[in-house]
Length: 363
Image (tube, rainbow, N blue to C red; front, side, top):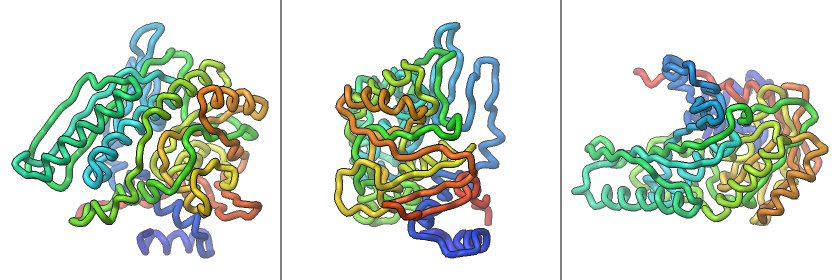
């Protein structure tokens, strides 16, 4: 649910009521999970530059020089709420997400690390979460051939009912050939690659920004995504093959806020038109809101020139992956979603991406 003050601000700014799709986009992209609206000012105080830093904040992963011929792509993310609700799948999809973040830079993932924080093990609930989180991280990593090379465990009472599940991924890439997550030019196409879209994970970004309730396991279970590491392995190989052609202009993982999140953030320097009815689906009767916000796993969005769409599609098919040409980059700062010829969202893209008002937890 979008906070009342945010909804009032949007109505005033847009001078109209919002559509169902627009409301869902703002609910997710203005959530703490996506916008860092209460922590952004703190994050800006952290060091982000150095002699070996080739690419800092703003992309799916950082790029750090390792040698003249090799750079490291490094990313870290937390999957705290999902791992409390469903420890195995929550942790496993955390691995899948950070691996795709590194992959989106054109880097081959080679190692995982997992700093984990739980409540004391004399609690049966804490033991259950601990055992299944560790199994989820290792199980997903094993299936995709990326080992967990280091971990950290902390047990302390403040983490009871509020575990911190962090996953780090490191990948390798040519320092002159890494890919970024911002679109490069109007007229290029946005191609969705990977698993079919279902209703799993709907509202995951806004769910991850809420306080956990006592009945979270039952109430929030539909918001936890289900991973498929075998499809992820195919996706890794396919995206690396696409990157090797030099035809991928930009790339982004579909994580929080699904296609709406990935496409709007990716196109925020220009604009985009997304055709929701072109997305390959695994469930019938899905609404435009569900298609745009579903957080089905193992999906990537790539920007390519119109003449290269067929090539990219053929590579996806070589790895038995589905693909769809779902949109285009436009030279107008708008984020537009169409469904069966009808415009279901039309927003200033800078309002949707980065426009969330800052807030403070201080009383």
